[in-house]
Image (cartoon, rainbow, N blue to C red):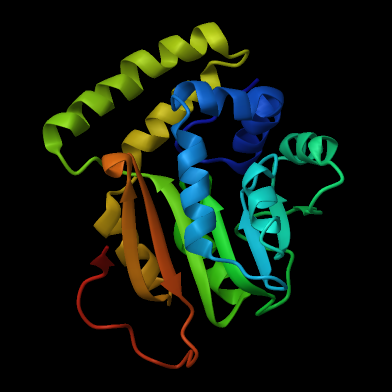
Length: 248
């Protein structure tokens, strides 16, 4: 496997996720000490999908989070550019809520304008080659007044704890992955990409600069993860909102 680096070359990143697809959900549980399940539940609650709504789960991987959205009665679409992840997700899908699995690149989404009531992406925006372009694409496929929910690793707001967490990322996490994962290189990339990711206010500004409004965020697990939410304005000709993005 070619090790993906922070240049985010799409072919390398896709190959990396193809290689870890079979054990991806298990490793997420191990490395997060089960916290990933709480984060997924928080995202489902914040998306607040209702029956009949169309929801796009971008960078959906094996569709674990998409299944939770489908259980609300929403018409959920799992989209990812890793064919390996999608194959695992389709194979695991049972006779419950149906999820549509679609191959697609976040920079060129294969959907019509204003196709979805909500778009969500969890732990995937960090891996795209162009954040601004991806945010614009997500806005394009969201109906006016529709919502955006981004769940991503972030910064612990208590600095001494954040320093401890950063040491865990760079020293402890790769060692755990070297024993538990078949492709530990992927988890070295994971740690490095989290280290390089912007803090909550910076990401909020990027979202706002892409034309989204009512931007705010919610910290989970002291800020290890943050969920940013926004709305596509009804009037696309409107100006950027005044003031700073809000935190709840």
